[in-house]
Amino acid sequence: MRKITYVLGLIVAFGLLAQDKTAIKYAKTITAEDLKTHLSILASDEYEGRETGQKGQKMAAEYIANHFKSLGLEAPVDGSYFQKFNLTESTIGSVYFRKGEEKKIGFEDFIYYSSSETMGEEYISLVMADEENGGDYDGKYVVFEADQLGGLQEKAEKAKEAGAAGVIVVLKNDQEFDSFVIRYGPYLQRPSLKMEARDNESTKLLIVDKEVAGWMFEKSFEEIKAGDNADVIFNADYLDKPIGTENVLGFLKGTERPDEVLIITSHYDHVGIINGEIHNGADDDGSGTVSVLEIAEAFVTAAKKKKGPKRSILFMTVTGEEKGLLGSQYYTDVDPIFPLENTVVNLNIDMVGRVDDAHSENADYIYLIGSDKLSQDLHDLSENMNKTYTNLELDYTYNDENDPNRFYYRSDHYNFAKNNVPIIFYFNGTHPDYHKPTDTVEKIEFEVMEKRARLVFHTGWEIANREERITADADKVDAGN
Image (cartoon, rainbow, N blue to C red; front, top):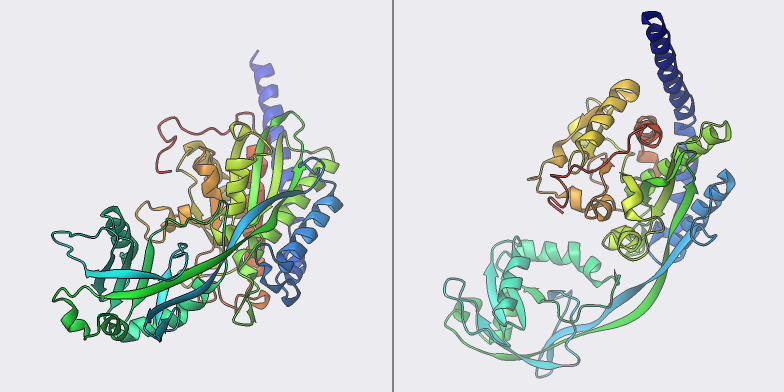
């Protein structure tokens, strides 16, 4: 009996060893050279920054779909690789204050931060805020003064709850006001995209300097606090139109548990052309997108050698992340091609091609976010895969619930997490080129990126092939979502 047990133990051990060697064999098909080849195309000027719904994004979608097709992945959206849907694009038109013939122009003299329009010129009544005792704000524009911009949205919401029609913040620091106009004005004027129609009931939030505030009240800002209640005309209008876009999906059917699905995601959109400059988005998130392409190829190569995953894998590059996680929201909230209850894990890759300042002495790292938020089993598996295969430094700095960056809520994995699907978000941290035209291919660390993509592959391999399904912990379901 002891001899039989010993032999069975050898068979099991040999099987595990063979599986390890198999995973290593196919992980090696993910190479820095191939990652660079893909990224040099997707993050080139020809793709115009992959703005959601625009020419470059459509070109990128075709490139990704053609890659999935060349691999032989199934087209799971009624025979298509494209999950198409419409967004509402809102472009701001004329924004100004007017007194008589004199105007103050939005985004030159002040900033307007809202999706609400005035439906033509309207007289507005101004009143100074009383933050201690509140006040009669009904239908009025409440004027706050501030030394800096933090917490303005919260003030605006509280004023709206008290009946205010809008909020005007007087930024007393002229240098900070000028910097804010230059830095954020162009972004706030760009068309916005939403899943639903534009919210015309959103809080009207305006940011002005002391000079404009004095002009509105016909006196210096210092005198405004006396309680003068002046009238001025305000105008803000928008043009809305539907914009079509698409997620790109490729499906590899599992050999034993095909109804259980692992989803590996990245977002392939970026911010397009701003002030005439192409924002190529090589790291954000060209790096994640080409990692998904290479990981898909590794799994398909294994499947062609009869080493297919036991569970199914959906490789999905999503659109509209830069506009508010819209592509992943559409998949999870509107049209999940595979039921969310059958989705075992989402592995999301968003910015994995650079090295941040905190790791300048050791580039072999990756930030992991969310691995333990819903499933301790997933977290432990992730740690084990890294120790077994890649030996990267796993940095959990941004996984802290008190992290002020709140990255857990800022990429596409969150739409799965809010539906209680366990997730891991792979991230290299921020850098000075974030959302700038300088986020280009020549700054990518492809050897480091190769290791990170291989970690995702090994983690996915184990999730897809192990006997037990990863599940969310009962005490963590709905926590923090």
